[in-house]
Image 1 (cartoon, helix red, strand yellow):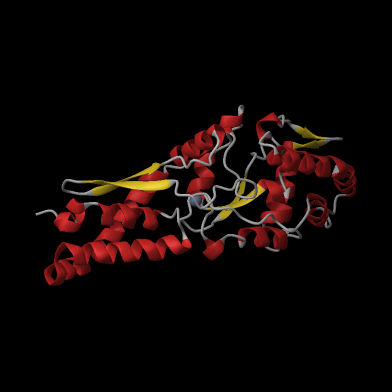
Image 2: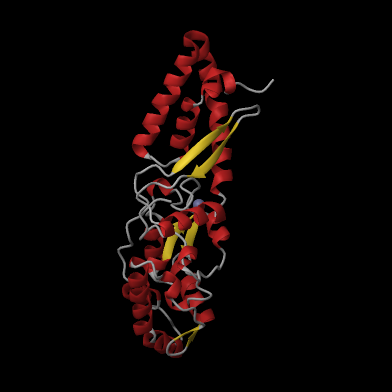
Length: 282
Ligand SMILES: [Zn+2]
């Protein structure tokens, strides 16, 4: 997971923009009356997130004084997410907030939607709260489903609040037989608390990141295999190892915990791999 800057818009300004063009006078009055609840829910979310207490936010099925889950869902889908909707600029800003349009949760696939960190079906007061909206790819969005965290360990990682740091936590292990592959694992750095370590492990498992990274790395190997063969013919095993190490250093400079960094490090450290393990199986 990558950390992201928190969105610039407040829950109040976002909600007010979203409900600025409601034509039904009765609905407009009811939505406006819910503004203090929306603002308070976002403030509570922010406090809870800063102290790792997000599992203590209680699921609810109405927004005081009298807005239903369905009505709040519509505020999100029709007044924020829909093209041309009054809140669409805020949606677009959050959508575009991750580097290179990559999903901050898997760090690999393209952002395709906004994910409700706490699902809007169970937390309607947070349906348009920017702190509860994270840019995400479709797969990560679907994998999260509508799960409600019940314990601190179950609280998903949050790109606006959780900082994993630059210590190495993503590693790969070369499977030293043909066909070779990489097995990606989370290795706990010294600075991580028990809870963070468990939460990262849950994140890694629930989003299927080991399989995603193994597949990307297999594709990467196809692309470098020819070059590695040429290097081995010219400079023997050291030529291969040096090239892989240079690539690891270059990847690490920008993403110390990217799958490429982990892959190149595992490859150059494996004598078996450098000595021809990279070749296509016969
Ligand atoms: Zn993703």
